[in-house]
Amino acid sequence: MMRRGAALLLVFVLGGCAALRPTTTDAPQPLPPQVVVQIDAPEPLQRLLDTHLDLARLVRVAGGDASEPISESELRRLENATPAQARALLATEGYMVAQVRTERESTATADARPRVRVIVVPGERTQIAGVTLQVSGPLGDEAAAGDSAAQALIDEWRSAWTLPAGRPFTNAAWRDAKNNALARLRGAGYAAATWQSTAADVDADSACATLDVVAASGPRFHLGELVIEGLERQDEKSVRNLADFSTGAAITEQRLLDYQERLQRTGLFEGVSVTLDEPDPAQAGVATVHVRVKEAPLQQATFGVGVSANSGARVSVEHLHRNIGGLRATLRNKIEWGTKRSLYEGELASHTLEGLYRNLLGGAWDSIESDTDRVYSMRIRLGRAYETQRQERLWFVQGEQVRVRPFDTSTSASASTRTDTTSATLNFHGTLRNLDSIVLPTRGTSLAFQSGAGRVFSADASGPVQPKSGPFGRLHVRAQWWQPFGDRWYAQARIEAGQVFARDAVEVPETQRFRAGGDDSVRGYAWRSLTPQVGGVDVGGRVVATGSVEIAHPVSEKLPSVWWATFIDAGRAAESWNGFSPAWGAGVGVRWRSPVGPLRADVAYGDEEQRWRLHFSVGIAF
Image (cartoon, rainbow, N blue to C red; front, side):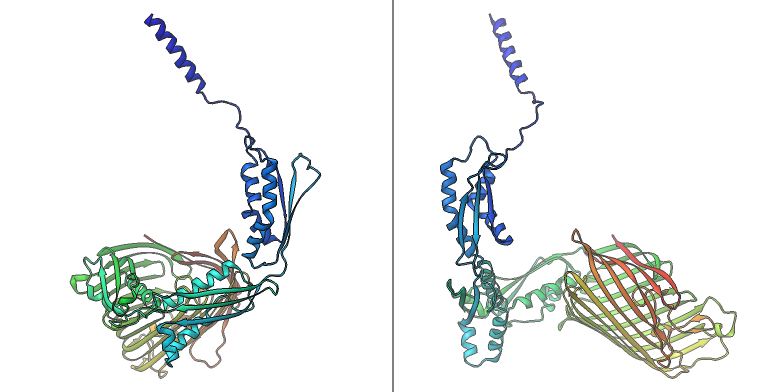
């Protein structure tokens, strides 16, 4: 009996397993909606209604479910509710007197589905007729008492209002304008600012709206304590020195963002956050700012490979020690080997001191090969730097030895270009920036200025005319401009000019002179080739002027970071301005705006050489 029961159980189990086998028939395709909804309205409003109307949404959701068809009574209910719902939706876009009706077509469609039409006549759109913006609280009181700074802040706040008279009134624009205005007050240091009242008086008959807002500023917040968290190996004083404000200073959003940016730029930290504690008006005079950091590794090595039309293929290695010997200083060493250029750079730089200054001691050895010669230089410098997001300043004294070795010394003229100089200079370099992005700018300006004065202490050459030692000076300016225009078009321009001041007989060091041509100068010509020649050997010029204009546009909407460009360049280096005549180059190229900076490839035609030349630059660090 037990055997028969077991056999019977086995039959049922196997039968159940067979029922679990996957079916080989195709899954049923979703059925088309049982009702067709047609919305007759201008395109933007049509999308709005199709997205949010219950009738349209329910038809999309339930239309394909044959097990739950829409009943006639439910369809009729949705039809009746649609006009009121549509008018409410259209009012959010400023159409306060819209007329909406629904119609059920008496004739069925080809597939026997009924059609419901939603007919919309939006009417006139409501416009902003007037705006009143007021500030109460301490900020308003200060302005009323004649405080010019408070009044200037209110004027700036009013001018930044994003929904002025003449603009269409929409719920979204009204909400965004209020949020933006309140964020501006909080960002200006009034972190507890709120709305005292906001009102939008809409006259549907005249299609006009009047806005009236009053902001309660609350007290302005001032720094009481700076709390720093996350330090292990780095010194707290270095972090505090990067704050360009002290106890009692107003805490503005821009001030905190600038401080955070400076901390990130030091390279000492992988992560940085600078925040104001939860704003408590009772503690506004002694507010706490928290600085939270995550330190970068104490030491780091970076290897790189690259190739460019200027300097050829290259490999590099760089070592960074972020706190050498506990001195609150960074030590950087870099070695690069290249086809046309090899160099070593070393720098010992203090962490930021009070006033955002850094002291530095550096040295370098450099070898640069051009078409006709190779220039070797060794230098050591001692200086002080000041760096912010918008400007950089560097003062330094420098001692330098320079050797020029021409490849051809078969004539006395070419042999005379073989020189050795030793010099000392006092220098100032400055940069001013106003850019939307330092790495990938599309709008703004940049100005770089270099000046120096010094003396050549020894100068030797192989030719019959021996150069002389003596004083010299040097100026160089480079200005750049970026501007978007039209539909995703981008323009940029560059101009540079420089001059060396010295007697003709003084042998100014080759590194203090100028050469032009190449990727970042005048495209269509070889690197450093637009320069004077002596006996067929290139020598640096005492003056230089170059300029460039470029227009670019993304290749397609699917590749927004890949741009094509067209450009025209001009300029050269020369011995003097007398008879100066620029060389011209023009061409086309492609740019990839990568996260680490733009990678470029250009094809340019040099007018003087009557030939095309490829310019490119690619580099990878790892």
